[in-house]
Image (cartoon, rainbow, N blue to C red; front, side, top):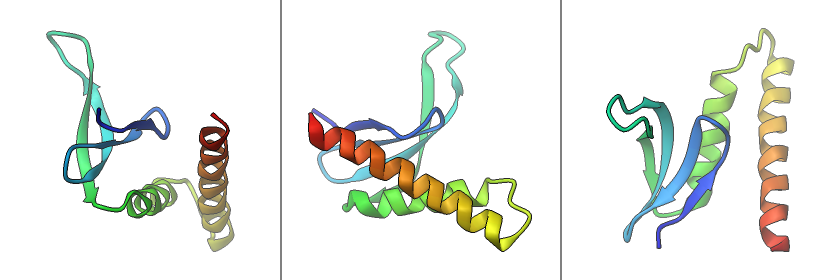
Length: 90
C-alpha cells in the first residue's frame, strides 16, 4: 500500500514501489470532481521531501524581511514536527 501523508490542504507525500513524491494540489477533475495532485519533487528519502516542502512554504510566504522568512520557515518545521509526534503516538 502506498504512503499518503497530507501535509496541508495543498501538499502531500505519496509513494510508489521505488520512490517518494511531493505532490501539489492542482484543482478538481472536471468529470469526476476528485482532487488532482501533480508530483513536484521526487526522492528515495522522505526527509528530502519534507525539506523541499519547508522551502516551498517559505518561498510562497508573504515575508517582507529576513525575520519574517525565518519565522515562516521555523513555524512550518515546528508544525511538521508536531505532525510526526502525532504519528509516533499511534
